[in-house]
Length: 313
Image 1 (cartoon, one colour):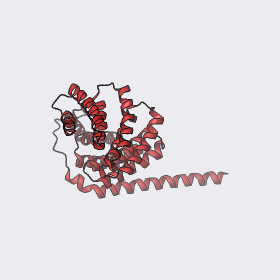
Image 2 (cartoon, one colour):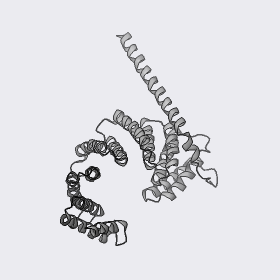
Image 3 (cartoon, one colour):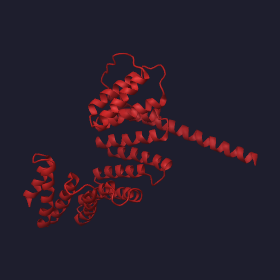
Image 4 (cartoon, rainbow, N blue to C red):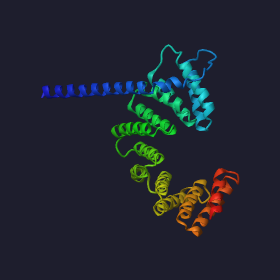
């Protein structure tokens, strides 16, 4: 019995070592493959007035977070870059703090669609990761940045790596797994591979319905995504079916005059227009136009777009 337990512990230790080696090899692979992006996207010089304390760096981090939540991404980037430069001057640099700061820089760069900089920061997150969630975050942001760059194969590759970690650490029905399914579906949609996109969207939908309920806005958003994929395939009846499901939830949760409701009216109207059902198309497009005029104004691109569809009828 003692020998058996010892054997079990030896096996567990061997497995832990194998996992560690695999992570190190993955980090080397990322660093080697993406080095040109890190080299091509240097941060502009940041002036830090004086050497800052850890508490002062944390204050800059908090300020950056506040700006980020307000959608002021340029201001957030300035504060966060100052914080990270100052962090680099500390004699003792906590590994957890390093990753925390890098993750925020990564998110800010992604919002600004500074794709090469996002890639550079995500590589750093992966290299310095202190837990699996950090690696999943890095892979997800790499996927997003490559999608923005139109490099869809790399986007899928990194999103799949992110998905594998989430499935292993959180379980196959976790919210983060569903979000990653959506992200992969979006890449396939942008590639024009609509059936694959629909497959991933449906996997996400199954999880959302089970965990969030049938009337959650994310369920509506996923119905819209599925509808858009069918519309792109030219299967307008299927597209309308999913758009109508989304509309029912949106009317219930957002109210009749929300811009998202307008978008769904517009989508249904366009499908009917493409089917040649002009009367139905006009009815939905007019509803969309009414919301856009009220909420967005006559000069908004969405208002002008719906008017162009009405003019074609």
